Image (cartoon, rainbow, N blue to C red; front, side, top):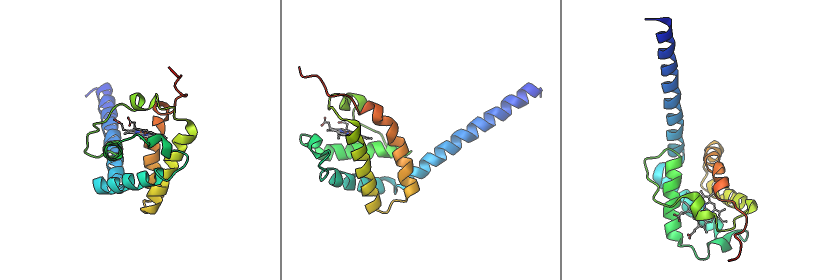
Length: 148
Ligand code: HEM
C-alpha cells in the first residue's frame, strides 16, 4: 500500500470516528432529556411558564397551544438526536412576521431553563439543549412587520 493510500485510510477512519462520536453525543442528549416522555414533560412545563410570563404570553393569544406543544416536542426530539420527524413549518416562515425581538427570544429561553430546573434536568444537559436552540435566533427575531 502506498503511503498516500495509508494517509487516506487514516483520515477516513478519523472522519468516521468523529461522525460516530458526534452522533453518540447527540443520542446522549436525547437520552439525557429523558427520551420522548422527558421531552414531553419539559415542553409542557415550558408552556405553563411561558403562559404566565408577562413579557411574552400575549404573543400566543391566538395560537393553538396543543398543536404548538406537539410541534415543539417533535422539534426538541429531532434536534437532540432522537428518532422523530418534525412535521411543522420552517422556523423563519413561522416567525418572521410575528415581530419578535431579542428580549422576547431570551425570555422564552429563560422560561425553558426554569422548566428544566423544575424538572431537575442536569445543567450540562440544559446547556446542550440551549446550544442547539440559540442558532435559531436568526430565524425568529425580526424587526416589527410594517403595517399594510
Ligand atoms: C428557540 C426558540 C423558539 C423555538 C424553537 C420555536 C419553535 C416554534 C415551533 C416549532 C412552532 C410551530 C411551527 C408551526 O406552526 O408549524 C412555533 C410557533 C410559534 N412561535 Fe415559536 N419558537 C421559538 C421562539 C419563539 C418566541 C421567542 C416567540 C414569541 C415570544 C414565539 C412565538 C411563536 C408563535 C406565536 C407561534 C405560533 C404561530 C402560529 O400560530 O401560526 N416563538 N415556534
